[in-house]
Image (tube, rainbow, N blue to C red; front, side, top):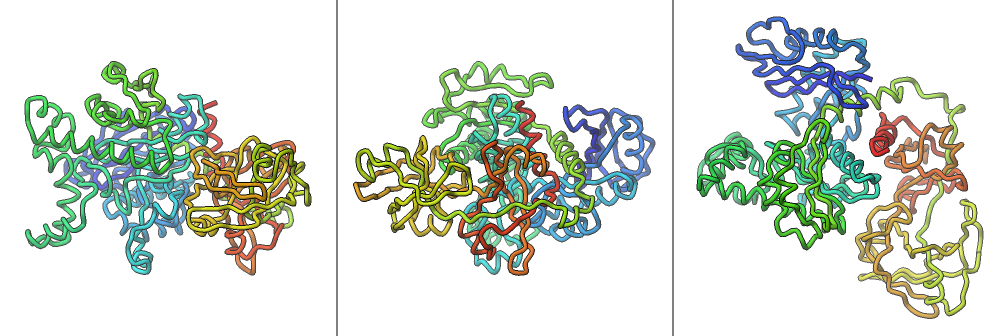
Length: 609
């Protein structure tokens, strides 16, 4: 599918017709100084003369017919929207209600959402017969855990004004993480990747097994790294002191932090790193300091995110600075040998990304952590996500409930999986597990044996062991359990225990210390290939499941599909979720349209073969 991708800034419009599969641009243009007497349009198509002061609507009315004529076969329009707030967590078909929703969260991004909306309104009026899809910069970060999302402010005040961390550059972080995994020949869900989007706007993201779990930008794009003109992280007390000392009002403080700081403020020369590097080479100390502060801030975030994820497999540089500045990549990569990240200086200096080679390695042969540069392509990502939404047919009415197959939802209590060696250490030499009752999944059973699980804070007694024995020990608990034990357990798929915290198990014959293995289970659905075909999903897809519980319509999001011949159809949630939703065991649930998320993830995997 060809998708018309529209990205409207306050005084600019970028529009391209993009092949959603390959990313190739069939036609494109850039309009600058929109709304002024000097509006300028450049691109691959002939554009009629524009009247002085032409606004977004006038420019789009003039240029879109020319673009569509030059690249026929457009099946959808994808719009970049910077802020989706808490409501929009995935690409979404645009209707009047969605337009109103975007407008409602515009106070969170007053410089970005209004021009995004101007483009949406104009394009919908000009192209009413095409489906329009909003792709949100914040959506990729909807998976941030609560501990990474919240500021330490009074909860009622923060909730009332939507003050929380949202993150930005999501389309870029998603795209380059996926491309890096493809280049490495790995599934993104098997890797811990730190993506560094370094441009005039800059952010770092921790992508743990395909999900954003931390990112440097927060409620607004001002938090985090040093940027072209933005300060990034700053002690709020420093701002208050400056406002008092200089008599700054709120608007002046806003200009200071967003327009006069960052590389520009540090160097006193320019917000463009190329200019700063040139002056630094000539001995300008302020420019040298700007480079040092910029690199230090990025390196600090990389180290923090490696700690958050319990390690890192790849570090990716992208965007204008990340792709083009060998000096900055070199400075950032210094002193990261402790992580197992070793830069190859020759490869770094020689790097030149091209359309034919959009990914390149910068790490030395012996580096455990791979260092990569990846050319980002947010237009392609927007086109891909928009095409996925249109491909779901999610605008069509859902089938009648009587015709919709359901999925039984099972409540999974805390439990332990053991190796045979662990069984004997805990229950005595030669001991084998004693089946108590069969479980729904063929060949699995609850055992007569129970254990005590000891954490740093408290212990939980009589935790059921499940059989048969496994190749590795694993303890699955709920969020309530992890707080009770005093352990910060990651949300993982069963079997994925690498770099998870450990605990102490106690049985009648002794104690066993696990160095790793305690997790909270990611909600998931077991199904056979025939079930997967019936529901139109594939192994690894992320879906949503609706359930009617206690008279409430609830939807479980981020449910992973697991497909295997031996599985029985069943969704698993933990006791916390079941209690909160007031679920009964084996209560039926239904897959619901997810605006293309499942197919988006499936196509992400397709890039890596």
